[in-house]
Amino acid sequence: MLSVCINRSVYTLYVLGNNIALGKPTKQLTTFNSYTSERAVDGNSIEWLNQDWNTYACTHSKPNITSELEWWVVDLGGHYRVTNVVIYGRYTPCCSEWLQNYDIDVIEHSKRFGDKWATFQKGRTSLCHYQQPVSLLMNATCPPDVKGRFVRIKRRSNAFPLCLCEVEVYGELITNMTEESNPHKTKAYGFPGKVYNGIFLQKMLVRSNFECTNQCIGQIGCCAGIYNKVTKECSLMRKSDNNEETTHSFHEDADCSSFLI
Image (tube, rainbow, N blue to C red):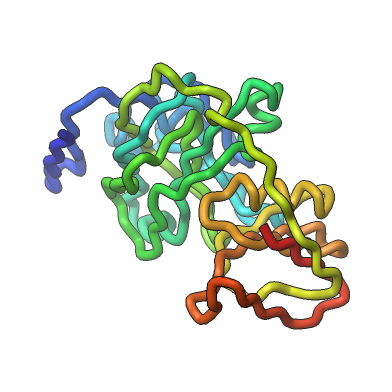
């Protein structure tokens, strides 16, 4: 059982349990100045040390330099059943609205992938929580049985830099995790020149339509990957609420191909 108490006067949230992200390896897509990714797992949740404005203590991505959506990730070092993710954002008036419109993902990782930082986003991804409105301090509760080794915070828009003062992760270690237990083959059906009409999940840059299809296979809820051969973007989609179980609708676009899973 997880117990949470928020002390608003000092901007601190107390969670009973072990923070499994504390001191673990981290990475972020871009880094502004010296505001590196490990600052989000150093045990310090405040924005400025000792009220000294020269001691900024949070992470900070570079503003608007890439078309790839900004992300930050922590490697838990093993597979966990993740129950809660607690995030502390910036509270200075200039930047208090920056922490919004992002996903908290939990990603499984197979040893066969090789280098973890080069391949961690290829693993099976479960959405713990989507946060649309601004929240300086939040405790996200994941759906049941969300599990993985990496916890990623990823923007859905690069309107603001990604700044995290602290990220805490709570859950239980899975001691008998296998290579995503029984690997199975998945068929994909290609539709050149067509865009699947579904509900958007996420977008990423990929090298090929094959990689886009694999991203969809690894994303829980994804039923179609849309690959744009001009921009190299892969959009992952789930079935529209208006689509019947066996019916899929498309619209024409010569630059794109859709792959149904």
